Amino acid sequence: MATIDASPASLGEKTQEVVDTFSRYVVPNYKRYPVCLVRGAGSKVWDAEGNEYLDLFPGWGCNLLGHCPEPVVRAVQEQVAKLIHVPNSWYTEPQGEWAKLLSERSFGGQAFFCNSGTEANEAAIKLVRLRTEGKRYKIVTFKGGFHGRTMGAVSATAQPKYHEGLGPMVAGFQYAPHGDLAAVEKLIDEHTGGIMVEPILGEGGVVPAPEGFLQGLRRIADERDLLLVFDEVQCGCGRTGKWFGYQHFGVTPDVITMAKSLCAGIAGGAMLTTVELAKHLRPGMHASTFGGNPIAAAAGIAAIEMIERDHLLDHVDSTAAIFRERMEDLQSRCDVVRDVRVFGMMIGIELSIDGTAVVQSCLEKNLLVNCTQGHVIRLLPAMTLSADEVHDGCDRLSQAILEVASRS
Image 1 (cartoon, rainbow, N blue to C red):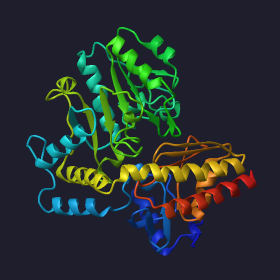
Image 2: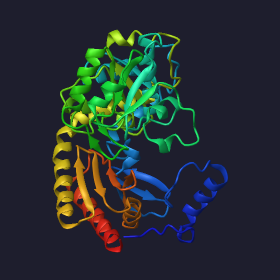
Image 3: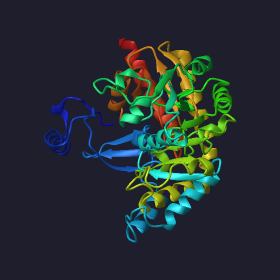
């Protein structure tokens, strides 16, 4: 197995050419690994030098069906030959069908389509405000949550590190500790219009809502006439073994936002809400030029059909069980593993050591993973992952953690 050295001198000639081009022409707002990926299939990707990697964080969580799933590729190829883009001032068959499929698999209602999770959350924020014509503009969000990078969504994100240098934030967001219902109640006043929460914190470290928390938020929202918004950008679209994360908790929100895996890697986002609430997002108040375009719709439809045809929701449960068994076994043998959190194809391994060193060690083993919050190894694997691939990935990850732990 080839290894990757982070030093520029070790880069292959093809990769070096790409890195040089980026250095000259691309804004350096991302920390990039010294690897140029050129091809993917399932949970495997290959770089410009032909090295193969096992990808347990495909597409930053967007590639829930793996890289280049054949039904989605075929649907996009067929659609792009017929109609690439038309404005939302016209009707298209794919967008209507896509909305119908999402509505039937959630709580019913209607969909607003956009291109990303942050845009979906912006739509939800506007909906909360428009419901009362701006009179009740405040929204309670939670520490450790993450809602996106636009000014509204980043203001909703209760993590100061994302606010640095951007102030002042958009007014109206109030932050409560995650899981603290009493704190939520104290924050609510006559100007509060909604509560926004991730049923399972993603960037926050793969942390499911504490028992009774979402039920308590539903009660508070009903008693105080607030909109309950669930940000399911990471946990939605089948990743947890159900179509939506809220379906595990027995709580139905008023609004769901989704993106990432919605279109199996094609850019796409959506906000779902009830028919009654949807009326407040009236013409002229919100829009998305590319939202719900025919290519994204074709991909979204194909993704839903593939998940159901191949019984992938059931497959999530069996795959998650292997991850849980393997990582809990590691935890029993390795003191630096503080906690193992597995919720379908959302896996968080909390460490007492620097997680970025583990990511680098994994990279040297041709395994792609992510670190969030500095010490949580986050995996968002494809739901098409085979049992052999799970064991292979756990072998490499365990070895990386043990190696870094031995040096700490």
